[in-house]
Amino acid sequence: MNKLEYIKDLSTGIETISYEKVNIAYPEHTHIGHLVFGIVTDGTVGVKINQEEFICNEGEIFSVALNMPHSIYPITDTYSMISICFPQEDNIDRELDIIRREIIGNPELELSVADMSEKVHISSYHMIRKFASENGLTPHKFQLQCRIRKAQELLESGVKVVDVAAAVGFCDQSHLCRVFKKQVGISPEEYARSAILSKPND
Image (tube, rainbow, N blue to C red):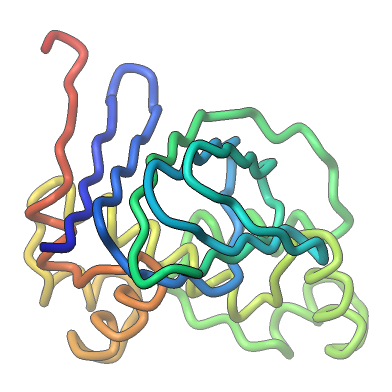
């Protein structure tokens, strides 16, 4: 049986994801404020970090810097892996930080490309290219990622899936479920069941 388990230490912010005999593929994404280490414990995965692509076999380790675009996909039928996400401060000043901060802080808001371009006084075309260059993803993909991250936090705190969908800006529960499973690898309900929070006094 495929198994995926999330463990989040609330005292340190360290997140551990354990994959056992899964065939999950993750599309290009970034980790905001986290340095990631992954070790493959069974099978083989393909890893693409920025424009570099390589194979990671059983016993091999890979790392992903914060804000670095990357994707992961199975090479063998299934794989097992452990990923550890360490919080890391992001002290880089970006030209479009005003947009980045607004999306991270309020991912549920509807922000059109025209609205974002007007804030930084450049054309929509150049704004999208500049944002992707600074953050690894287009504004739309970055916002979806931030919405899913907020959804994870709400699910961890016990909020119902239908209420999470509305809170993070999806039109309905089914839309949330589609995007969530694509980015996280499991459904919101499965995530809520698998997420274990390690409290400071545990």
